[in-house]
Amino acid sequence: MKITKQRLKQIIKEEVDNTVNEKFDFGNIANVELAMPGDPDLIDLGPIPRSYKVYKVTLSNQGLYFYLKHFSDSMKNKLMPIGGAPKIPDMLVGMVSKAIEKAIESLVADVSLTLKDKKPAHAGAYIDKPSGQRVYAKGKKK
Image 1 (spheres, rainbow, N blue to C red):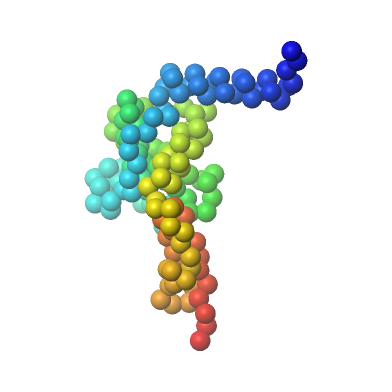
Image 2: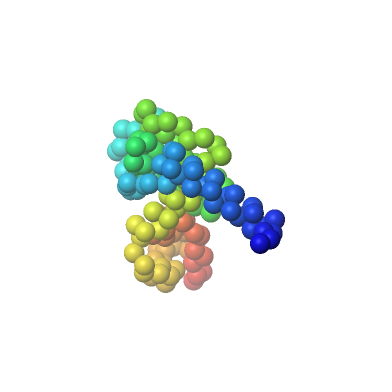
């Protein structure tokens, strides 16, 4: 039986992902919630730009983390440990971020949001979608 290079790469990637999940247990997310403004742990983050939404993430066996979700650029998303939680190795941050994104999506109702449903009071405003994405809505000039 011949295995193509592409299939071999896929098998290796799956095995590495499985090994990392078993060893570090980062794939097991116990809870994700939107961070409240009065949360004392937020002080450690310093000033947070308005372009981020902050989620408090509990990974089982690993501790608490803040997940800063950028409203338009997923490459700018950040994962930061709270208190004594271990820092996640850079090579695993992408995998953990994908799992957190799925958990955030499951928080949101499956109702699609249109601009008409959330029309701004004035021309041009940012709207926060339930998915955590912030979009700019152009209003009508009168």
